[in-house]
Each structure stands twice: as structure tokens, then as C-alpha cells.
Length: 330
Image 1 (tube, helix red, strand yellow):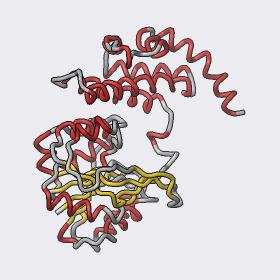
Image 2 (spheres, rainbow, N blue to C red):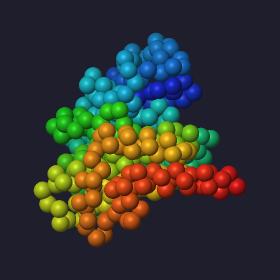
Image 3 (cartoon, rainbow, N blue to C red):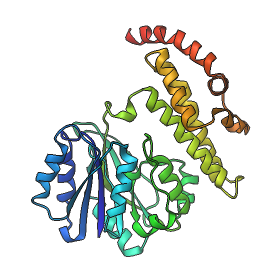
């Protein structure tokens, strides 16, 4: 049996379509369950899921007492999931028919993870891209995938997981932060010894420009930088650091911190810049990041300024923001 875990927050416009995509699969209801976790929605998401469950005995609804974002909701879903296999689904996306073949592959071969082909589509369902791998009928490990195709897909929904494997690794989603699934995927790929790839479309990622992770805010940029710090911490935990695999993790961690610093200029005000630093400093010591000096991934001058000289960077960015906003409007 497979458990589909769906975190939902104010998903009234998309949750029924998401559920329909699962229940329209060629699967008997005894062979899967759906665990939906409402993260304190303020719309009628709970009512819609409750009504839907009246016709489906294998749909479980859990309600969070406080909003702690996707990481906490997914962890809650994992804690009650009964399936031997796990699939994560975002409430504004759809499951593709190819996931049935991926489930069969995972079940028949006892794989730790199965990577699935993902199609990126517009909200009108027009395909604008896809994620594919040349690994058809091949058994490989996660280190090979990360080394040959660094960060091929770091979203949790791009894979099916063996529940026992997740329990063994015991690396839950970080809670209360955005970008919670990237390091979750990285760590599990590192431990995955047997993987395969299903080249039938198993997931439809709907590009939503209004989503939280696509919106520039002090919180989203800070959480982007904090993802980088988690990846750098993972790099530090690796026993062998002179490999292409370790290099890719170091590069990915550095990139996320640098990208967050680069986008600070897109914030709305000096107050937002200060909020970025306040949030970052409450989670991490910025100065400790400057120890990463390997030439290929060394911070550029702007990142070093942002990490070392908070007040100077805040002053510079705050002064430039009005001009950037003026130019962007034109």
C-alpha cells in the first residue's frame, strides 16, 4: 500500500482537483490511502476535504493546531501513514498516471526511492517543461544521481519512498521554514542504495507565480539562505570531502546563500532588509559562513559584504531599493 501525503493551507481552489487526480488512478482503494493535513486554513479547505472523504473510506484528514508550514504538516502525515510506500503531493499540483508504474517498480523491487518524471505545466495545463533522466531500467544509488545530475530535482514530490527507508534515515522535514524539502531530498539521496527511474509522467507541477516560494519577501529570502546553511552543515557531516559528490553539496549550499543575498535588492524597503537579518541571526551565526573559502565556491564580494557587515549592507541596499523599484516599474 502507498500513502499519499498532502499538506493543505487555504487550498479550497485546488484541493478537489488534486484529490481527483489521485482517485482517478488505476488503483484499488484498498491499495492506497490519502493523508491530508490542514495547516490551519482560514478558508473552507477542511469542509471540502471532509465532504470528499464521505465517499472515500481511505481518506484521512488531520488538522494542525498551529500553522507550522509544509515541513510540520508532512512530518505529521508521516507519523500516521500506514503505507509501506510514501508519496508527497502538494495541494495545488496533480498526480500523473505514470505514478502507478512507479509504485509497481518500488513495490516489486524493494527500492529505497524511485525517481519519477515530472512535467511542469501552467495553471491552464499547458506543458512548459519536464524533468527526465536517462536511467530507464537501471538500478543506481542516490550518490550517482547527485554526482551525474546535481540537484536534478530537490522537491520531495519527485520521488516515491520506501517507508522503512525513511524510518531508518530518520531525517524529518525542518519545521517552520520555507524550502524544507531540498535538504530532506539531499540527505535521503545520500543514503539511498537502490533506486530506479520511472520515465512515465507521474507528477504535474503547476507553476503558480503567486506561491510563497515564488514571492520575494524578507522571510522567503532568509529561509532560502537558511537552506544553504543546512546544506553546508550536511557537507560538514560527510566523511569524505574530496569527491565530486561533496563538491556538489558545497556548491549547492553556497549558491543558496549567495542567491538570497543577491536578491535582497528586490525587497520593498530598508525595514524588510532589517527583518531579513533579524530572522537570519536568530537561526544562524553569519560570520561562521565565511570559513568556506574553497576557490570554486568562494563567496563573491557582495555576499561577503552581506555576511560580514550587516549595517553597511542594510544602508546600501536601503538606499538603492527606491531606484530599483522605479526602474522595475518602467
